[in-house]
Length: 267
Ligand code: FPP
Ligand code: MG
Image (tube, rainbow, N blue to C red):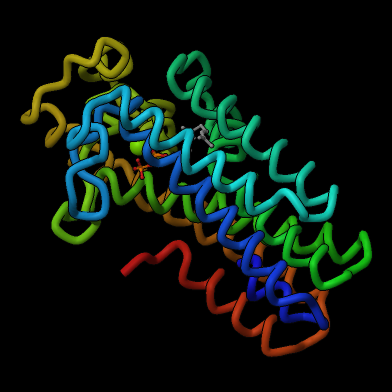
């Protein structure tokens, strides 16, 4: 995203590579730590790093990637440093909110995913815009684009957790149900469901068996909760595309529009 946005205007390609690589390393470090926090077994079709080398080395490996990112950012403009460090702080807040699960409302879900996922995409787009020398209103437009792409991506990722084949996603299925993470389809279901099993209590207790998870998934489908989440992801894709329309037509805009359109429909 940094690289595509930067092509809007003349830029220093070396600087763009360094900032893009730094943001990718931060993303990678966050996944190394996330898998440990989530107790995940698989990432990108391979064992999660902490499963291979143990928890302490994996924490240090994540820290190492994180430090390497800041090495790459050491000569970046101050505005980029500010946005990226604030994004990391927000990511930690988002992960803590997810661990606490204290707010199971739809607004609480959006606050969480904004922090854990969307802020880094927004920072990536804003960084590309800064490197292309854009003015403040255009930087803000690109930040909005990254924000909506991030929300759409996380809703799609949460749907994949429920529906997708682990052989395709390369990670465990039903991680959220197992860990009691209440994502958008579950929030919709819990607010509309007819009387039935006390799902929220079961989720909170982390006591849902494999069979019960199957029943819950069928109920989500029947209640239209999966479809509702898909519509919300599509709404954020539309908002991302609306933001893009405020920019003049260009190849970069076409590429970003394709990326936004694809983000909620992973292959
Ligand atoms: C994946 O979510 C995780 C994130 C989007 C953010 C993780 C952030 C941290 C661990 C804090 C920041 C840490 C550093 C080092 C920058 P998910 O569990 O919903 O997705 P998944 O299904 O791919 O695991
Ligand atoms: Mg995870």
